[in-house]
Amino acid sequence: MIAEVLYTVVWSPLARTALREMIGVVRGSGREREFAETLRVVDGRLCRAPLDFGEIYRSHGSVVMHAAVLTLLGLDFAVDTARRLVLI
Image (cartoon, rainbow, N blue to C red; front, top):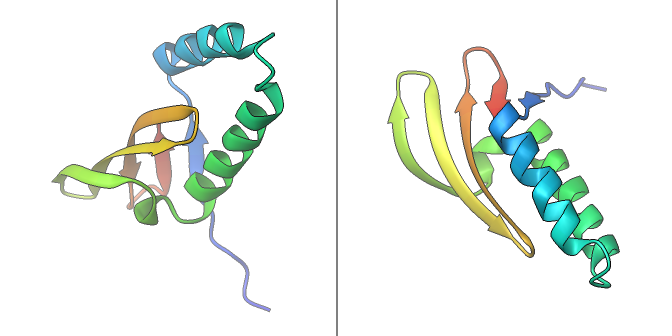
């Protein structure tokens, strides 16, 4: 069995703050489970195949910038293919 090479996903302080705000908005709306599932799906896709998620809008060397929307969540993230790193 071939081991799957994963990317490290890092949420910037700004993204973590925005995520906390979004959780506050979603809490009590009846969509908490949907939002949690969306986060799990996004995390899985970014760990395993970030270059296949969202639309590329800029690239420079080994860094590719993407924008993506999935149900309740919109993201702007960079993929550094040389370092196998995703920064949200």
